[in-house]
Length: 330
Image: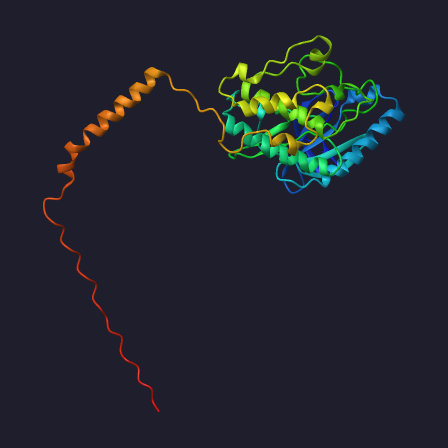
């Protein structure tokens, strides 16, 4: 069923405004707190709760409590802020900061300039470093989980995959040809997940930002021998350094990838160095050159018009006001 607009949670602390979306594991609501500020409430989906036996549900809830505690300690400008965690009836809830803006998945320009995409990726990379230092992995890095703050060039990582990797068949990530962001280790409950897991997903995110295309899924590449198309083949404007970094980050075997976000970020070009500038068509180039020559050629004709007919009259000097001398009385 879910909660309806106007319903109150936590003894009136939060009022539901509307449902924002739902996925396999959870439902997300827009709410308003007692101070009148909007926030986001996340909880487990009804389908998931109804399918789990009580012992498995308890273990999943414990896992979410533990990781929510870690998330609360990740104070970083590019990580969504956790306000608090609580239980409403039989549901674990997370109250989080509401970020006004669009996700990178819904940006009007599906293919970003390389320097813009790299800026966003470095911001998220910095956030992931903070996450990893606190001892856990995001597990769900993708454009849909990165919000560009309205009116700013600042991106924020949201929607941590707190339920991913829970060792129950109902919550284990299943193979999907559409999920080009999940590395192989997220498809197997017994596989170890470390920072290199997020390296894969961040690389796939950069792939999409620069090509507008989701890379072939890790499962399809592993089981069906699907080919990973180098991003530079889809967008020739991508620099060689960035192309190489993406391919390195998308290696199937965890041990073949760079083990930390910082190691992988070092592969990217710094600033505008080694970036490929947009190419100008020859016809347009010569049109621009001709226009510049025309403008420059008319400058001598303008010069007489710019000369004053007579020297300007100097402005009168301001009067000098002498200050009366002060005398000291002995």
